[in-house]
Image 1: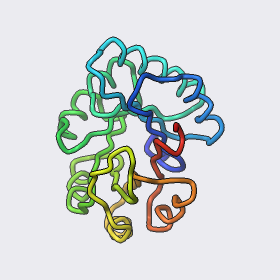
Image 2: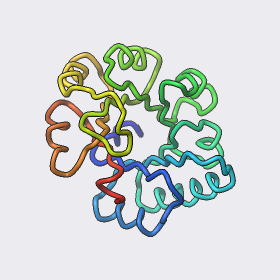
Image 3: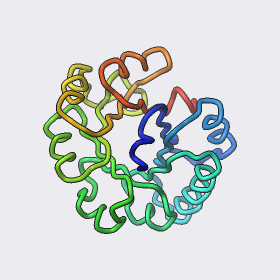
Length: 189
């Protein structure tokens, strides 16, 4: 099953026009298991082009390909799944559109209750963060590692840690109960 691959390193693309060669280098150098495309641009054609290129890259490297927020783009490019935030479509809407085999991840911030709800609604993984100070989202609410530890006891789906994670502090997140850690700046800046 695809969600068994939700482990190891979870790379999230920087929010800017993509450098495909850089991304491919990161995937190979760091054995990235999951790549999330996150580009908050209004240029739909650019998003489609970039997502299509990344999909091919992920197929080549046997990497799961997740689209941030956009169920329609996920469907168009045949990505493995979508990651939903608090203000995005519901898990039920995503599942109805993408089918039972797609991966649906959900941001739970610092709230165990959201994760329990996401699990009951059929999410394939949940993400907690920011676990550490994050330059990508400096105003993000912090999530204590103790929330991850508690979630690991109460949930039976993979947990992604995000927010300020580096190669130096990733073990703290993994020891707390994360199955995978998401990185942006550590990989791409």
